[in-house]
Image (cartoon, rainbow, N blue to C red; front, top):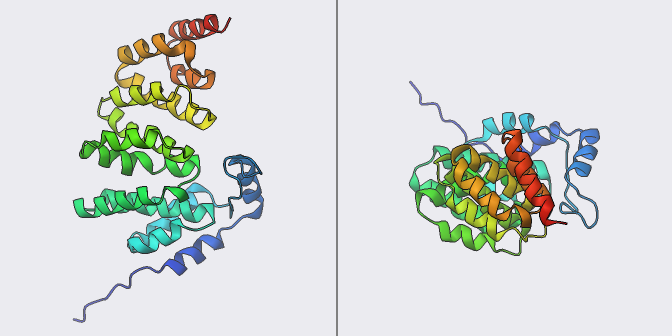
Length: 247
């Protein structure tokens, strides 16, 4: 019997397949949703209008794409191509051995310039950066990122702690949350509040102690995200402490 040789997937084929699903009407909605106007955080981003399920389904056929080609895709001006590249990076990381995981982690942090919207960060950071830093005790790497001038690197830092939270470790999340209390950007306020909410599911006493101490200095949206799933009585207590401090 002749052996069957499977050809590796090609980057150009992936790009062409993504382009087939372009939807101009949905693209216009995405441009507004992801704040691509002048002066907004996603200024200048280009959308083709694919849905996330479409991108994930297409990506399934290209799991064997070379990492160097995945990085080329990540450098695209098109949002959905960057999103698909990150789907492929997550898959490669999760299915790879330690050498491959290290390669993906290193490339991820070398290319944060192109991981430049909240959905791109949120769909990939906990699985890659968070998992790797947790495995290798690289908390200081995340601390450095949390002090970055880049909005997206700061969001990567706090979202990476999701991997720690899932293991019942919330101290790094609380440390970063305190550091980010005075962050100027709404997307950081929301991310920190989200991580505090997740941390509360695992360690409610520690998170409630933190909130009791800092609610008065916390941006309102951060606090609201953090207490969203708490019992009503506790939510009112936290909001009451926050309101009292503002009068």
